[in-house]
Image (cartoon, rainbow, N blue to C red; front, side, top):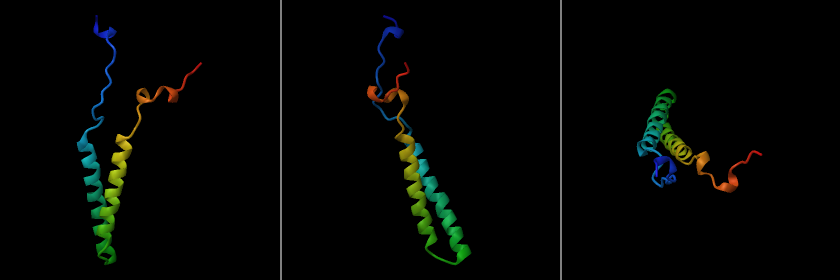
Length: 85
């Protein structure tokens, strides 16, 4: 039996690199934390750093969820696949 005749084995492992998730969250916190710090310096306030860090963490988690929760066309259940006739 050749390799072409063998059935495809589904991969049940993780679909992405966990470092991408870590990078999204850390970069979100860093970027928005710095923006909050700069806004604090400009406006003379003391709370915008914390707000920026929270917004950055939230957006990082959202980006992680959006990236790793995608459904690939070949992973859809049979009732959701479109049939062109």
